[in-house]
Length: 312
Image 1 (cartoon, rainbow, N blue to C red):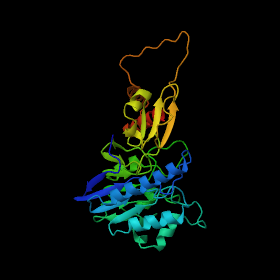
Image 2 (image 1 turned 90 degrees about the vertical axis):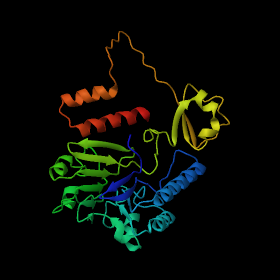
Image 3 (image 1 turned 60 degrees about the vertical axis):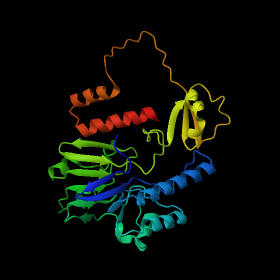
Image 4 (image 1 turned 45 degrees about the horizontal axis):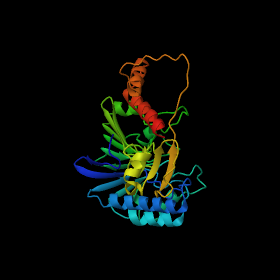
């Protein structure tokens, strides 16, 4: 598991990457008090990462959770991002699909941080060896990079084409052919790392995990049995807690950000015969993927998707 919000050395300098923040997010599944607590956690984590010793910082997209967020959220972020060595990529949640409908991210073009907001035109460093590229409905990544030959790209794209024919998918084959050595990507909320031939790709994850599936480290979203919870209930008071069992009896006084029950699944079948010898889901996916000629990065992405579904 790769580190969330990683600090990475590029061309001799430390870069602190800040995963998708989604500021202004409405957590509708929880109480107003918990929504406020989560918003505070977001801002506290963002402030913490802005204070990590590093020469440069980059928010890898989705600064805001939707095209239009409250004004107080915009003002808070302008204040936090007012640093000469901090850049912000536009993400898919930041962009309005209409030129007539200006988004909250568009408003940043009229603030002191305007020159460090990356939209359709790449921001270049180290004589063009590093390119920061924002999300765009109008331009593909290859169109943004026309005439450029970066070795490292920081962007906000899908890792796979999920069947919609999206142009916003990392073009691994073309980038490797151009000599790109590394892609650092936002967009997916669970951090990852892998290889496509000689090209390394890194997913920063989101600023914080926002679901159980996005939190394999169980930093904020915890899954455990009732017995485990009752051994030290105070330990989990600032978490989203999912209890494995048949009911929540005995937990009436337990306080946490949110409490839910996950009942064990049972399967009833007659005359069911399975032959499994030392196989895991990941190993089965790998064998099937290799048999179908899938590249390594697609097999890894499919394994991640299955793991997330199992954790959700």
